[in-house]
Length: 68
Image (tube, rainbow, N blue to C red; front, top):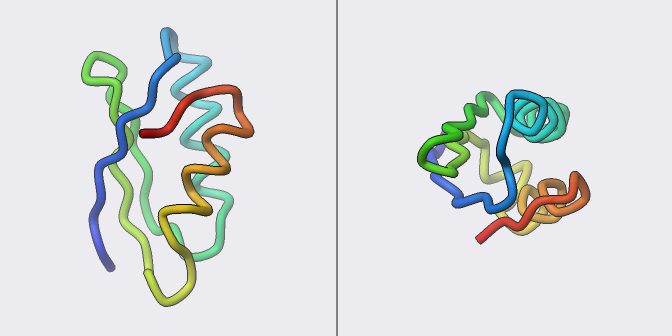
């Protein structure tokens, strides 16, 4: 498992946090996902053989946020 930190713009509340975490955790290959609202980051643990950062960023953007 590889750990990555992604900056996510546009999150401002618990609902935003839950939406991002739930969407990312639903992806095959994601073992853990935790949003830090204050830092505007998403920390994830993924199996890079099953999923890439591009797919994760697309999933975040589908929720209405900007992944950097």
